[in-house]
Image (cartoon, rainbow, N blue to C red; front, side):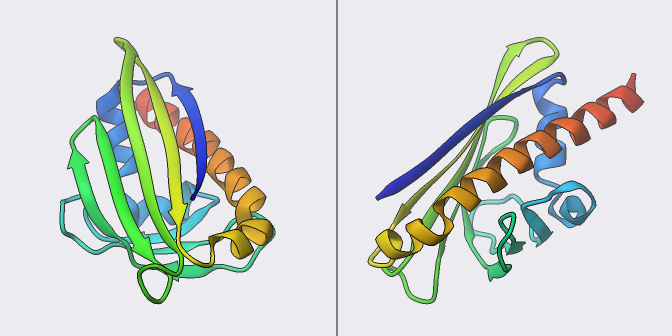
Length: 149
């Protein structure tokens, strides 16, 4: 098993972060890592994403939402081809630092037979993609927050 763990602090309330994070249709406007998204943040729903780590080709991924606690946690699980080959549990945890500041933990747990082989090829690019997504999320959320005030 491999894990990627990143986090960022955003100058906006948790609710604004949640709204931007779960608006998958607008990912194409701001997200440099998940270039396109569809679906809803409800448990059991199937999402569809075009994931494209920096410097690599994109892949369409169809994970299922396993947890969606509004303003707290979003979690989905997906598989490459068959379960057990390359499985990923993607997690966003949102926590209020103070009234208008939010900490976002963005992580993924990868498991399966292909992880050791694919990790060498994609691990660092994926981690850079998470960091780029975090920075873009911060920028987008703070822009939305600025227009609300």
